[in-house]
Image (spheres, rainbow, N blue to C red):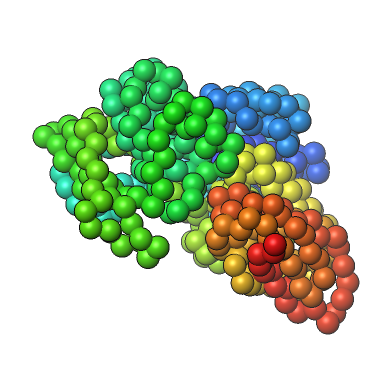
Length: 405
């Protein structure tokens, strides 16, 4: 079967749902493709609250956030293809996919990639020891408990203090699983401060900063994890070893943007985009964790909404980008998104500093923008809004940060 449409959105998580809704409201014919048999992506297994405070001005659980978007989607004419896997995206704007009806093709005018990110696996960490059962990524453990009602462990240690690791420490504890602690190689937590407080301190779960797992042992099932302290260069400090007798190791060691099957656009490692979410291929737009990993699904949905709008305008030939201005990471900036700006459109910069500051000044030059951030830390994104501007002399923008007293 062959389809034709204005906009295709791949991925029906928070970003993809928002993109499809936005593109439809902008007057485009939209097809939304989702590989699972239900929309929502990882939101379906995030049964804790804390979602939607920015986007809906409500405190929602993950499924409630998904349902709120789903209700909006049902008011549109978007065609949704579930249980559908995209095989190939070609430069001539054709999308090949497979589902229960066989292999099909869509001819589109524009595309929004909202494919999210995948978890970094334990095997990528090169930790020596036995390869046994009982080692799970935090997302898999969350799915077992929240969606499948399975108990993955009796005692557990968590490696990595990213938000999902912190949230799973609390979730495991509430399910009666003894959590021996959270181990973090960095000298500061990797997740939001609110999650450190609500998920660890409130339940007296230890956080071992500047520590890492050095070996795992077990006979078919994990039963022992070795942990050592590290110095500022992440080298193991001798005679600091701790041994944890646990039957599960839960890893929360980062997310990798999912860019497949589009492999002919600029990435670093996620899709490199402008402030209108346009990639290096004019007709392809991208939003959410497939570009850069965001703190909140609220930001993902907001970016998806913007990507859908501009994809629709592009399909209708109502948006053609002007000369883009590159945005450069300056001193003490680790993450900066987007990478380019169409100066005639509004912009929102998402920034992560490269180290902890008690107080920091963020500078955007040559625009002369300066903001003060209390307790700037790499785990929490800083947002800066830029108004449209016209200045032919500006060829590059630099963002940098420095501590102030």
